[in-house]
Image (tube, rainbow, N blue to C red; front, top):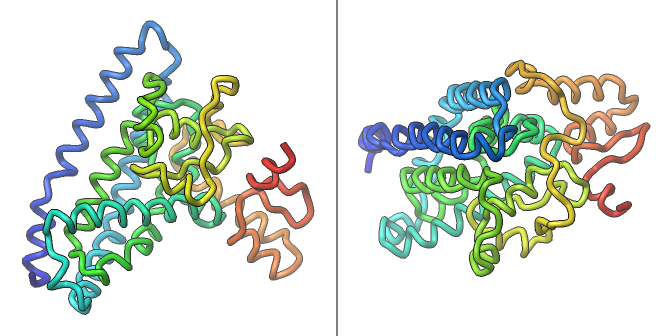
Length: 299
């Protein structure tokens, strides 16, 4: 497949056109279903911030996605496996696991590297958990996102396969953003990411901080020590450890970048300036260490 043919095929991908109305209809159904028993599930201003962030992130992602596509195409062309790994059924299954593994590390490092967190934090800024929150995507994370998938075309997977799998994963993840589904069967909870697992991920409780980074499979969190189960005795409290309390989409998207810059300016040593960029959120050169791992040890 040459570059022009690949671009034409990419343009014919209708998954996004299918997903957008599905997301909006699902959010409307959830709102109507919960209106009487859960009247506080949705908040009008909060919902429109989420919609705004979804639109904004889609616009920002266009150029990084195009550049990633070009890079993926080049890496696929030089891969010694490109004529072995095509679009066989087993290749799709293998790609499913490799894509999910890539997403886990992308998502986890978005929480453990402050510069990445600044691009991801808008997704966690809502104090509500609903399908609208799923649309509140981080803007800045779009810039570095595709670096975590660069190794896949070298294994012989073509760019369109990779983008399709990324989209399918995000489609699944949309539906774990809800409070209306409690626990699913134990076998499913053991293997897959579920609403219960993802409520933990969005919680600001110390016990739950920086846990459950799963895309589709929860097994990566269990393997790498970032899993936490939702407890009946501790209801998740959504939002940030210090909420920003604004419905201005620009501030939602940029507030952590501003905070990083302020910390860099007040840090006396160059090494501390770098730590404010690359260490986990919560580190301070002159104050209390409020990183998630530190707080959990204290707890």
